[in-house]
Length: 94
Image (tube, rainbow, N blue to C red; front, side, top):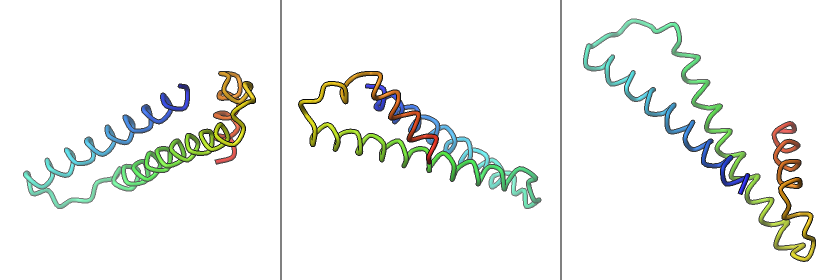
């Protein structure tokens, strides 16, 4: 369940970031503003970061499900401690 919450939060962050970027672009297009924005690079980088978080959360969930299928009799794998440890170690290395 922890990994599903991680995926949901990643999707929410990605969605919020994309909506705010789209609204900013739409406002500038409507006002026909052609000046360079000082935070444009930061906004673009943050979109890539949230997309990376989204991809890594789906990868984490897929690896966990694969381990649960391969080792179904080991109940430690399905515990919240293992999920937390798996989540923390996966985020440290990625």
